[in-house]
Length: 103
Length: 272
View 1 (cartoon, chains in turn blue, orange):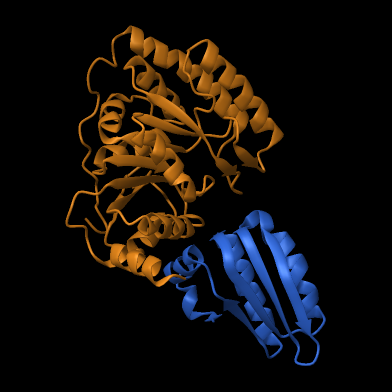
View 2: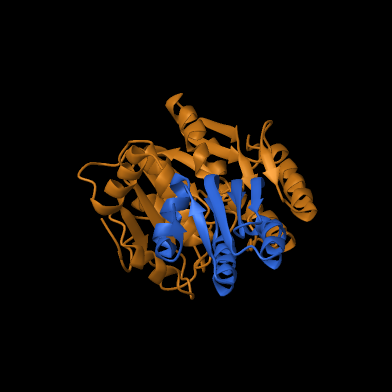
C-alpha cells in the first residue's frame, strides 16, 4: 500500500490522505505510523481517500474503526472518500458503511 | 464507484440466476471468520463486473468459529454455502464445491485473497485457448510474490523439483490456491480425487497429466496473507507422503473410475 497526497490544515485541525494498492494486515503498522502523529498533534478530522485501494481486509477495517474512534474522542471525525468498488462492497457486507461517513 | 459495476453487483446479490452460470468460483473455508467477508466482497465485485452469469460456492470444512453464520447472514442470492459437519481437510472441501459447481468454467480460490481475483481473466484466456486446466503460479516467469517466508520458499522449491523430475508433472507451482478448470475437466478430476488434505492439488494435477488434459501455468501476483494456516515443515512431510500415496493409488488402479458421486450438502444455507 502506498500513502499519498497527505495534506494538513492547522487552521481547522483537519488532514487528508489517500491510500492506494492493497490495504491489509501487512500495511496496518505503516498506516498507524502515518495517522497516529496526526491525531497526537491535534488533528481531529481526517479524510482518507480510498478510490485506488483494490482490497481491504478485516485488520485494515479495524484500523479505520480505531482511527474513527480516536477522532471522535477529540471532537472530530473520520471520513472515507470515494471508496473503490470492492472497498465499498466490503464496507456494505460488513455493515461498516453505516458506521463511517462516506463521501 | 461506477454505477454499472455497482448495478451488476446489486443484481447478482439480490436476484437468483435464471440460467446456467458461465463461471463458478469455489472458496474452501475453515475457520475463516476474520477473512471470509472481505474476500467474498472483493470476489463478488470483480466477478459481477465481468458481465457474465456466475455463482459463488463457499465450501465450509467443519468450521468451529462463526464462518458459517457470517456467510449465511450475507444472504446473497447467488452464493451457495455447503456446510460440513466436521473438518475433513481442504481437499474434501474443494471437492464438494467443485462437484457442486454448475459453471462452464470453474475456479477455486483460497479464502485469504492471497491471489487477487483480478487475475481471473488471465487464466480464463488460457481456457479459451483450449486448455483444460490452468494453474495460477508463483513460480512461473513473471510472477510477483510478496511476503513469502524464506522457509516456505526453500520447501516449495525443493518439493517442486521432486514433482517435476520424479513425477513429471509439468507445473512449477502445484500448491497455489488459484486454479481454473473447464466443467468437464473439473468433473472428471474431482470425482476421482482421493486425497482430502493439503496435497489434493498435486493429485489433481497428476491425474490431469495421466488423462492427457492440456494444462497451462499462468504467472500470478501472490501476497502471503497474514494468519496463513500453512506450517511449512509439517506440510512438506505430508506432501512427500502423499506423493507416494498417489503413485500407489495409481498402481492399484484406483483412478480408473469415479470415487465420488455428487455430494449432497448438509445445509444449503443461502441462495440457489
